[in-house]
Length: 180
Image 1 (cartoon, helix red, strand yellow):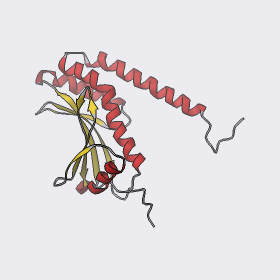
Image 2 (cartoon, one colour; image 1 turned 90 degrees about the horizontal axis):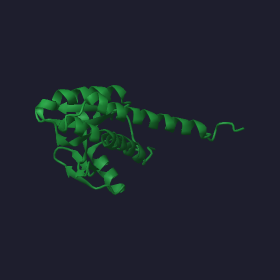
Image 3 (cartoon, helix red, strand yellow; image 1 turned 120 degrees about the vertical axis):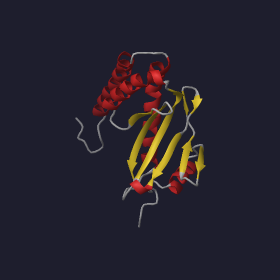
Image 4 (cartoon, one colour; image 1 turned 30 degrees about the horizontal axis):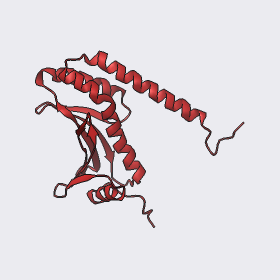
């Protein structure tokens, strides 16, 4: 018998996940899209959950709450390349036609079942990555900030946080590990 706490990432199951966990959301049932209500840079910005079942994927994407002017798109593309090169998961992308900047994570869905915690973790990657980089990306897009100088601070802070988390994890004994 299948574990009832595990589920595939279909529109219906993601909607039930939102309801079960009391996350605010909107839906477009006709297209099979969900918008999980969030806030970024003081503005309402949803995490969109877009099942791409014909490709056996789910895309979680967060549009940044500002548009990138044409004259700053090259700088933002440099910034995206820097962030993508240092990211463990997900990708920054710019829709050049509309000047829309996104961070997205794509999850496989074929023959894979997820838990509530697993879906939450992926959504937290989308939100957390956006929260960490959005102020710098906005400064690059709207204030003319240099992508390399601005993002080096963000990248160094993320590296320090990762190193601290790894050190803390290494110092915590696991239940199966022998203790001294």
